[in-house]
Image 1 (cartoon, rainbow, N blue to C red):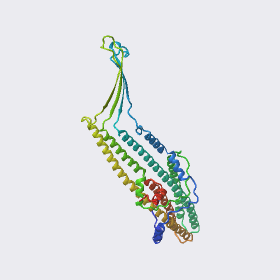
Image 2: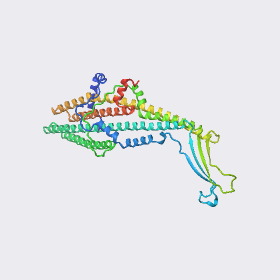
Image 3: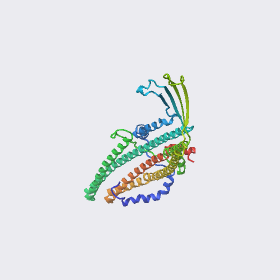
Image 4: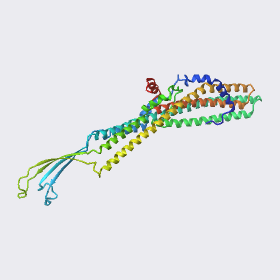
Length: 455
């Protein structure tokens, strides 16, 4: 935020801008904001992104969640555990509590339930799609963290550039104070001019403190994303060159529909709901129970049976009847519920698809406008404001200008430099937002469009 309204003298650069705008418009078609990138120092942004992907607690927690989803028993082919039993048949009451005394027989049995063919496959397919959703949600979280790291990094970069401009401005205003003092000493200037300049210097020093506090806070946020100590120092690059964006909006939509992780997760959700619907419909089909038993006939007391008893075995098969009129409503309700869940998933996908397309469109427009503003600021407004300041300073030192006009020119120059850096930061941030909105890096977007995937 600036301390004063835009001064009247700042209108001069805008008039000149209108005169050269046709030339700039042609230049913008092929040029992008180019910063001096020969000397890049400080922490590398790609290395910080890698650190965030490896260390961020939110990502690691999601990775464990996805691991749990893939380790779910629903992914495996299994049957319900069998039932095994032993029955001590017709033990006399007088032998209680010993079941092995004087009983007539011992029955051994085993039973196993078998679902109707196809039920297990449908259940496994639904579970696979659930885990697949987790994979894509993890990818979406990573994209979000990458965007946050980049935008926070660009914020720190902007604060550093503003601090640099502030230091240069303090040196310049110190020169103006000396000029005003010399003018006052020879009887040309006024003491009020010196006081105004000193007040401006104090204001700049106050701003430098605020910038440093803001930087420390932003570095703390960035360190939190990297799972580092909040007070860890961070040095950003001396200059950043934005990537060139030369692809139209209509080529982005097919790419984001096939690559955006949130949309892919919601497609998997639809497929999971379809599998759940198939499971619900198959509940109309009966499940089977297969069992067998062996009867061990023991020696009987004399006179209790007409002859000697023989051991024997038996086999049993049964099935449930889900279509009985008293149980059918349960399965009908499950089908209705699964159909409603499927319809909900499809509508949520359409809603998210529209939102993602709108966000990508907004990010692309923001990137294009920021690029133009950064180009205008760097090539027109900053040079013209600097020329106006130098001209006003020369006139004042020659005794032909007012100090207020000089101060206004200084403020205009300061504002132009800060606006230029702000436009660059917005351009970089919008490009990071575009990458998240599409689900691909700018380089991957360009390569896929070149290969024809964006048609």
